[in-house]
Image (cartoon, rainbow over all chains, first blue to last red; front, side, top):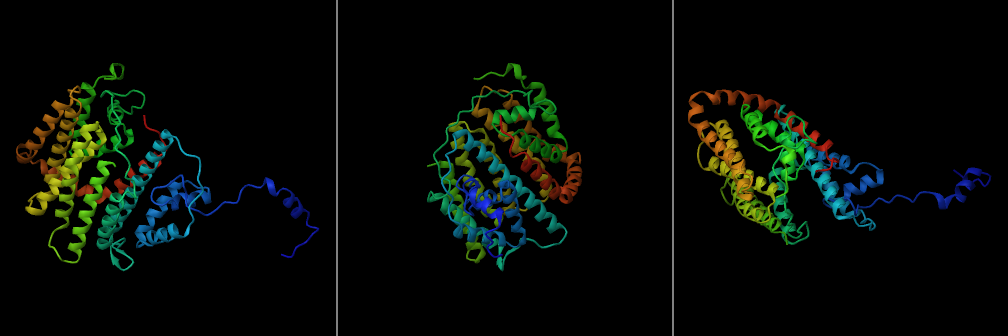
Length: 229
Length: 170
């Protein structure tokens, strides 16, 4: 469109240039990183939830691994993001937990779809391009092992978190009798995960774990008696 | 440096190396042998490290991995006549092991000891007495059902965990 000086809107816009929001840059995230921060960067650029972008990226593994290659290319091409304010210890922990659940939940969804496709006879994920997935997985194990040992990927210091909680029923987050919530509190984990595990084990052991649940409900002390040791 | 991660790095390196050797048919090992051995090698020191700093989640994870490693290794060396039956007994034995380790980790919680003994006894009875009662007839029925619906369950649980990602822990 040719430049038109009579365009009032243009002059108005030029006058307000300083008030415009900063231009979004397509770059890797420095704040929300699991591998290289590509998904986090895309999420920041699109103003989306990073978890959804990560789930979409995991889904591409079912299409022959093209997404994994695209991820590597993007990691090389996208510039690293600018330094953002450092997160506090609690924020880091919370983000770590969220990322763990995103990856765990996403992997379970993708694995479920993969096995469902296998069951119906639709091939998915047997080959990454033309390379056998067995070769790719072996090489991936080797590379991840090397990355961890060389300290490039996640080799922090030993965590010495003392778990000084008592094993007792939890009233606040209970669903039925508070056994799973109490167990989760004792293990410092999410009650949802404990409930899912209990449900699966009850199913697999023909209800035997249901009996164990009831036994725990009877013998576990109530929350009022919960004391720090 | 984090000892658990060093251990994980070494095990992954070894497993990847042997998988590649297997892929190129340089060594004749089964996938079950590689994964089983890797799990055993990872889980034993991991329990030792966890008991040292009282990380209960890691104790449970290591116990589950150890039992899985034992089952995979046994399956790869011996012919198991009833693979589904072994799952039932293994779950009970593994649960008993977890409760026993939790008792060792915190002996003040006495409830774990009787639970672990009950679980281990049940796992023994499940392959002897319960087997005679025809228990595995029903486990096979459930197994057949799960074989069809388990991907759906996996997706369902995945969605639950994914949706619950922003909830804070205790």
